[in-house]
Image (cartoon, rainbow, N blue to C red):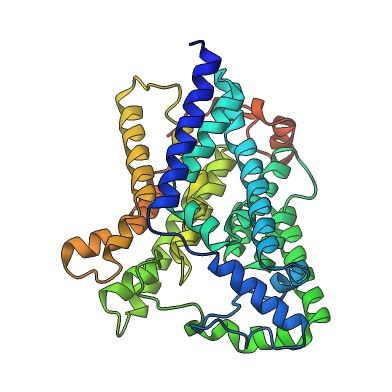
Amino acid sequence: MNAGRRRVVTVLGLATVLAVAIAVLPGHRGWFDVGVYHGAVGHWVRGGDLYEWTTGNGYGFTYPPFAAVSMLPMAALAWYPTIVANLLLTALAVAFLLRLLVDPLARRHGWTRWYALALACCLLAGLNPVRDTVSFGQVNLLLVALVYLDLWLWERGSRWAGIGVGLAAAVKLTPAIFIGYLLVTGRWRAAATAIGTAVGATVLAAALAPEASRAFFTEALWDTDRVGELAYVSNQSLLGLVARVDPADPDRRLWLLLVVAVLAVWVVRVRRAVRDGDERAGFALTGVAGCLVSPVSWVHHLVWLVPGLVVLAASTLPWPPVDATLRRRAYAGVAAYVVLCSGLVWVFANGSAGPAGFVGANAYVWVSIGMLTLLPIGRAEQDDHPGFTEHCGAVGAPRGVAAGRQR
């Protein structure tokens, strides 16, 4: 069998195994969240209150009004076409992210590009957060793609960098941490663009839907019961960890101390990443920090960890690594990937008492903390990104940053 045919067989075999496993193993979410979007927006278009509509078990629309405005086409679609539209948009987002994050590695190392992208797609599909995002019909991967659109724009020196972050923050509040990233790293123009875009989108939504905007910012935003139980094992944030210690009375002071500690580490690390010209590590660290500090980070939100896995994998190339440090890093990356694929936290869905329960129920939190503190920084090879060298010079970054060593 020649190499080309062997690659085709490998990809088809891996895709088949994944498809069967996803279809047979428990965990399909029945397009629950896209059902919430579809039901709430349809109810709103027919004259109802956007934030009063709920499913049979009490879940309602929790996003800002601009998200509902952007989802208005759903109101014209029946149920199954809505699912298809969600899947197609998610597939486009995945294609963009793979092209941005994985294709440069394939070109740099002389890999067959379609084969590298196909394997990466299979590896992506194996992750529990990705499976849940698709199965719930969530918007997470679309938001990651919007934010990483700004990375693509930034690496090309575009004046439009920041617009993706602004739109993502207007759709859902948690990506606003990337505005913080732009501010703490001194990206003033991109930060202004992001803030202006987010404010403009929010004002537009307020003009189109004043009552829904009033309801969100004065009532729904502050109603934590709308999003679910903080101690539920799917909440893999710092507050989720604290709540599982004492579900009846989570220690908010401990949570705030942990948030401050995480933000302090994040600021130090992202500023170092920008100083070393490693924008990709900076973006990845920001996604990880956002998952940790958000009061609620359901398992499907952890797709923000995917770019960090790519950065970690890239730091160990070429494979197999011969240096002992790189080998340890590769083992750690494989372990993190396996844990994120395993669905380990769901073993403790009915209780997380005792040391084993505490460790297992918070498994994804430990992965996030490990990535925040240990993700390698320093390797930014601008040859892969047209215009990046000139842009670095324009903002005062070292023009020789591509030679930076991975730390």
